[in-house]
Image (cartoon, rainbow, N blue to C red):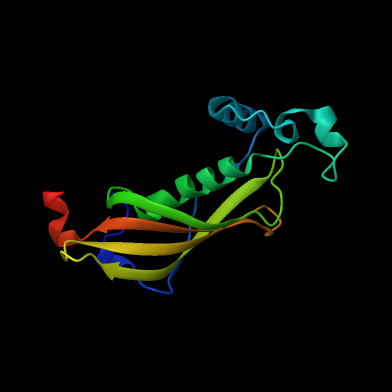
Length: 153
């Protein structure tokens, strides 16, 4: 377990996640296949070539899911009860095949549950490409274990 317990989250703390991932054409294709997303902007090189982007874009939901996965080891690995919500999702710039993604999470809020045995933590997650351009951002809210009650969960 490498995640943080509720007590270890500090409002204002930014966690720079060490893992990075270069997104491949195969990643994008498989994600679109698994989710039955047939948007030609993601899959059809001819179609995408005639758009303002000039090439296929990586599915934005994949980018968000990848960011969550990258962030888990330093935030919620083994210490989470549940993801409660993803809010304020934005994709200010596209992600292309071959882009390398890095992620940072900033704790923006936390509060104990009414029973005092767990806590709710909100993090602002920012996703950057290899040129340090913001390509995705969102708020992730989780229900986190408190260390003293972890054995009972």
